[in-house]
Length: 309
Image (tube, rainbow, N blue to C red):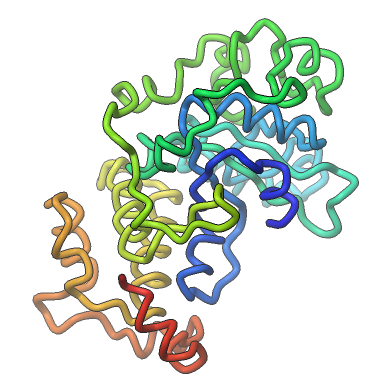
C-alpha cells in the first residue's frame, strides 16, 4: 500500500475494497487494491503506475496472468476459465495493473482504477488535479506504452487515444475488441455526474490526497456496486461484494441495523435490511464474527465510537 500511495501522490483517490475495509476495523485478508479516481485524473494515475514499473493486467480480476496460469494443473485452469465471466462487471469497468515484477515476493496482487460512477463514490471534485497541468513525467505517452511497457504481447495498443478499460484476455472475444472499448462512464450507461461526487465529511483524508470512506459511506458504496449485477446472474464479484458489506463490514464491526436509515437510496436500504434480516431478529453476528475475528474485543472503545460517524 505504501508503494501505491507514493506512486499516486498527489492525485486525489478514494481507497476502496480491502484497504478501506481494514481502515474501518475489518480483520480479513482481501485480495487486491481498488482506487477510485475522478475521470479527469484517470489517465495521469494510470501513467504514473506504468512509469513506476507496474504492468498493465489485461486478464480478469478473478484470475492471474496467462503465463502463470499455464503452469498450473488442468483442473485449476478449468476453474479459472469457468469463474472469469463472473467478474465481468469489475473487468469491464476498471483499468488493472500488477506490481513491478522485481518487487513481488510471493503473490502479485491486482491493482484497479475505477471511476466514481461505478461505485457511486469518488474524491471531492474540488481536489481533482485535472484542472491543473500535471508534471510532464506523469503525462500518458503513446511511445512509452508502445516501446517500454512490460509484457507487450498482452495487447497494449499504442494507437489508443487514452487508457481505457479492456476485457479480459480470457474472455471469448478477441483482444482486438479492446481498441473499441468505450469510456468507463459510457460502459456504465451514463456520463459522469455533474455534481460533486463526494464531500470531505464522508472521509478520513490522509496526506491531503488519500480519502478513506467512513463506514456508512463505504457500506452504501459496496451495496451500490453489488446492485449493479442482476440478482439472477451468477457472479462471484457480486457475492464477494455481499461478503464485504455484510459478513465483514456489518458483522465484524457490529454496525447498527439503522446505519443506512438516513440515506436517500431506497433500493440500497431495502437490500441491506433484507440481507441483515432486520425485520426477523437480525443475523447471528456473534457466530459470524467468531469465524472472522471480532473487532469489538480488540479495538479501543473510542475507535468504535467514531466508526459510524
